[in-house]
Image (cartoon, rainbow, N blue to C red; front, side):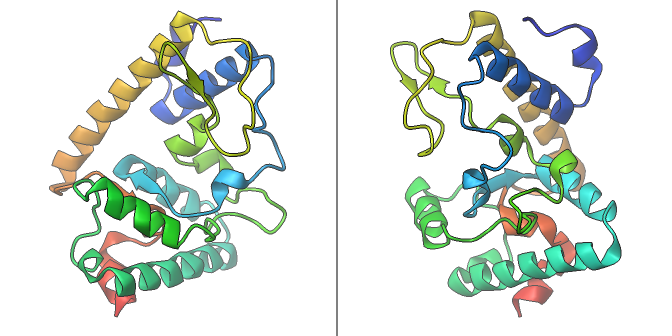
Length: 211
């Protein structure tokens, strides 16, 4: 089912969530992504300045004690990251890191739970989750082969997504890039990607918590 014109007037985050729902339906519900699966909520990974904005908005929607608990978890993770990689103290952006360095750090902390991951497997910030969380799970298609999105996908659906759904995926990626570029210029910063825990801790305090 193609995206309606009305959908395009929605915020990027909502458009992405609706795209995932359409793609999942087109794959006949064969994806393992459903309530109770929190495999991709464990381990740190890159998120963007746009994701940081929505996470901060979500934190403000929580009661004080709940927000404090999540921020404390993220702060402890930021301390460990900056101790392991001191340059993160003065520059939290990882856009220009060699891919191998990113992978090594992500692997080192692969057992970390997302600060917003609840004990019951739910997400405390589900309505404010990052774009990567909204789109994760749809297999990638390189034309000749389809690849599972994570290790939980031991098999990929036999049905392949339509050209229209893949084109919409590309349009959303382009829209994200445009909004990121505008936000980067607005904030006057040199990068767009940070590691997940930093998105829960305001940038102005990143150097303080690392001390």
